[in-house]
Every structure is written in structure tokens, then in C-alpha cells.
Image: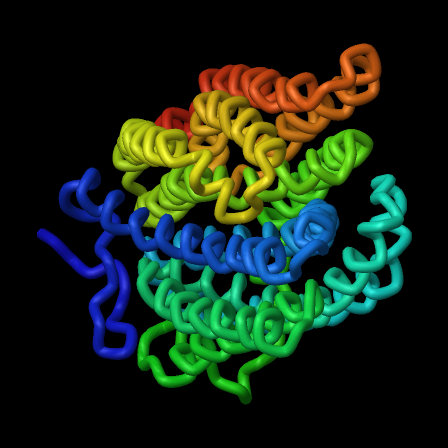
Length: 466
């Protein structure tokens, strides 16, 4: 019998994750996720390309300013958006078990949580924006523009968190299309405003930051309009906007380790960015440009890790543990195929893509060097990301966080302080990416073999039945 895992949302049937074949549904769920991430990065890349191309002699400096801000944004913002993984898992578990009351409580609790965290983070970020940039040894010629960009960007943090938590609700319920639609509409506005503010009005980094602020509000508004209109279990009612204690505890139990993992991960990247900054403006600009290209391949890979979390979460909620194991295997297989295709295309067009950001041959050469190292690292990152997503689907969040801190962050920090001083080159910095991700992938595989969550739950259930 093939049933429905979720009620209709806005007149549209959601994906049934707990019945039928898996490989095609995993692909259909992951593709909009990948498209969402790619579109988001295209819009971010447009920010860098516009300031690189439309600000004359300031192009490289503006690119460096945006690039120098990225690790700080990652530390302040992405660590908190990581908490939205708790919402995704709670909603997915409840959807698999057809528990509409838990879904409803998770929706309203998550919205309140996003608002509170967003305001707190915005205030803290504004207070410490400049000290954090100075701690990275950002050159004085870049610092003023970087501070200006970061301060405007941080005003939109509450909107960014609202979008991410709302998107986690939709995805946990089985809908990846609505967040894609919201981001597409907002991103188109972002690109248009970039040209209006920078090329039309003569602004620099403040123009692209302002465009991001406006588009973030639009993407959040589209999702909230959908939640207010839907008749499904994820319907948002203003009168019910209050946190539920037990649900909040479940979200935080899963989300805080994921958020902490993101924070420590970002801190390690700040250490790396500091080393990059010490090599000068050209290397900073090249690294920033390459990041805005390599992230497209990461989004393809990461979409299958997110898919693994949601499919595992729903099937765990439904008690179908064999499908959880098959989900991991299929996400790994399809993730590697997708990653291979993305990497091949980007490397083929890599120099031309880098030239869109800045035509300086040195920027292009250094940027391509980064691409080569990062894509090799993604071979290990796929294993690490998918196994992490699988474990989180069961609500196991602390172990992936601890392994990330030890494997990724510990290795990267040690490398920059112990290896880089003796080999001061861009290639020496980039080598840390495959090394750290290989270490973490090995640790994650070892824990999976020991933990075996599906097998343990099956044995526990069999024992209970006896």
C-alpha cells in the first residue's frame, strides 16, 4: 500500500519518502536543493563580480573586502543557521510518523527561535564587526570597505535566519520546491539591485550589501506567505506564535551541536583566511573569486547530505530502518555522480569563470590553484557530509559535531600554525583542505561502523517485541 507521508500543502501533494522506490525520489528531492544552493551562490557571486568589474581601479580591493568578510559571516550567521537542522529533523521525524501536532508545535517554536536569535546575532555582530576583521590581519586598504560591507550585511541577519528556519520546515515536510521558488524570486531582485546600486548609482561594497539585505527580506516573506496560506500541518498561525518547551528542547538538542560544528568550522576558516590575507590583496581576491565558483560543486554534493538527513528522518519516524540504510548508500552513489559532473564542468571552464570576476592573470592563476585543491578535498567531504546527515536523521548530532571539531578544525588550525610558517605559499595553505577532510572522513566511517544506529534500533525493537 502506498500512502501519503504528508498532507497537501497549498493544494500540492508532498513527496512520499517512506513508500516506493528511493533512488528517483532522492534525486527529485536533491535537485531542487542543489538548484537552491547554486542559485544562492550565483547571486552571491554576482555581488563579487559586480564590485570586481564595475568599480574601476578599486575592483580587486572591493573583491578582497567581500572575501575577507565571508569567514566572519560564516562564523556569525552559518553557525546559527546550523541550528535549523534541528527543526528539519524534528519535522521530518514527525512527518514520517504522521504526528501533525508535533509538526505544528515545531513550526511555531522555530519561527520564534529564529526571530530571537536573529536579533541577538545582529546586535552582537554590529558591535564586534570591526574587531573581528582586524583579528584576521585584513590590510588597511581593504579594512574600511570590509567593515562597511559587513555592517550592512548583518542588518539582514534576522531575515536570513527566518528564511533558513522556514526552509527547514518545508524541507523536513518533503517540499524543496517552495524554498527554491522563494530564493529564485529574491535572487533575481538581488542581481538587478546590484547593477542599480553599483553600476547605476556609483556605490561599491555598500551597494551589493544593501541589495543582499533587501533580497533576504523578500525570500523570507515569500516562505512566510506560503506558510500562512497553506492548509497543511505546517500552517503558521499568528495567535500560536510561542515556543513549546519540549519541542524547543528537541530542536536545540539536535541543532546546537550542528550550530557549534558550524561555528568551530567557520573559526578554523577564519584562521585560514588570516593566512591567506598575509599573502596580499591579489591572493585574497583570487581566493574569494575561486570560492564563489567552487561552492557550486559543494552545493551539489551537500544537497545529497541534506537529502540523507530528511529521508532518514522520515523513515526513522515511520520505523522503516532498512530504508534508512538504503538512503545512505543511494545518497553517496548519487552524490558522487553529481559531484563528478559538476567538478568536470567547472574545471573545464574554470579560467574563464575566474576571469568574470577579475581579468588579472595572477588572480586567475591563483584562483585555479585553489579550485584544484578544493575539488580533490570534496572526494572526502562527500563521505563526511553524507554520514553526518545520516546520523542526524536519527537525532544523533553531537558525534558529527565532535568529529568535525577534532578532524576538520583541529587539523586546519594545527596546519596553519605549524606547517604554513615553514612553507609560506598559497599551495601550502590549500593543502590543508584535503588533509583535514580525509582525516574527518576516516573518523566518521569508523564511528558509523561502531554506532550502526539502524542495526541497534532493529535489535532493540526485536527485543521489545519478544
